[in-house]
Image (cartoon, rainbow, N blue to C red; front, top):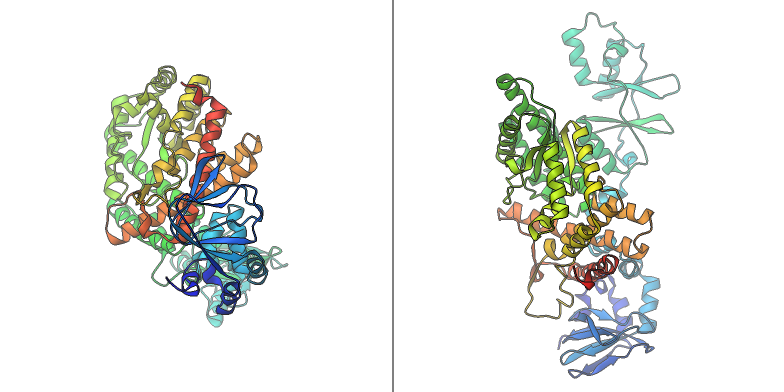
Length: 602
């Protein structure tokens, strides 16, 4: 039997404790063996101990129903009054930790106590971050923009001559000079690039800075997180940000300053700018592939889904819009001006929940020449596949005439789906009820959304809710030795997305596509219990984080990306949080069944 100290030191969060702190736990440690079927704790029992399973398996029962299973390295009995019954599912050995000793450590060790508090409050993102020694998130979100300022601001005025500004830049060894008003508020910035413009087009060195500066200056507050500066640089495709405090110039930071906080080999800003400067499909392909690898590295360093999805959505949206524009220019020369249309996305792209291994889910709503629009769909989908966004295996693409129709046919199709609730039509609804316009005439999109709101029926809501409850999470999976892996998309992400979507449809905000935003809207109307709502948001991000890490590893190793998580390959803390997330999903599914009366039959 492994000595208690060696065993406990390997288990997080006990691994956060010093040797002396672990020794204080061990002073009063007891060991107890339980035979299969023996009751360990009864419901309502007051216990002076917290149980840590050394071997075997413990079942947790509520009113005779098995609701959880605890295995090696997991603890139970944190509450002084135990609210459930604990029973040995097989011969089991537990370490019994004195509650008093445990609580004293909670007061002394901040990281140890924060872990348990965060876990109890279902703050799964914080649990994951605490369990890492040093995280990308800590560096990126705790660091403030002011920490990147290396020099005092070099400034001039709008009436300063180009010659004097250039001399001042040279004397201070800077690549830019902030143009300010009399009260030190930025009105523009003159960079080395602007000086090159002057050399090409300027007439005399005495010309004023105001004629060549970039204005208005793009600013960011000194106390803003570095990550905000990172996103601002990405979105605008610029190299300099003017840092301000109370509206006045504090300094200047560059893209390179931000990149230094990452790692020297990761140049996300440079790659994004390269993508935006691409002139053709071939150049876009090269830049896009490099971006995906860079993003995969960020994921493995701890960047979270909710923070990353906005960036991924920006990148994917830009690629699609750019490709559509390139193809449209080609087709206009061949066929003339096309009819009004709108390119829409479905699935994770529509929800702004992009992951690395995202395939195409798109459609066209138009008002005219169907053959011309089908040609547009085929060319765009083919180009996107070439760039690195693969075609959809289910053929949910604008290259398929079924998903490339005029507005009246789309309306008729949705009415048919809502009225004739076959399993196939319910599946179509689960795909196409997430719609987001990407390029074109959004009036066509809004017209279809209004039709959807008028067409759904109470019976269709029940069928859609039932679809969200079909795939139940494998509760107790850590006690089932035969279960070695789980599909986190089908058994975790799918039930949340589909359940939240049907609630959004019922309450009239289907055009809000993002799952987190839909949950927040449901919270505003108080449809879901606040505790469940917050737990769903935390659990959903955790599942997506796990999925992203899985995909990132697959991409960097050159393997096919899957949604299957193998328990042997994930961290013990991740496994623990995964089990808690499945409990939350089960609770949500019970809510859906009650809300829509699913258990009474369809």
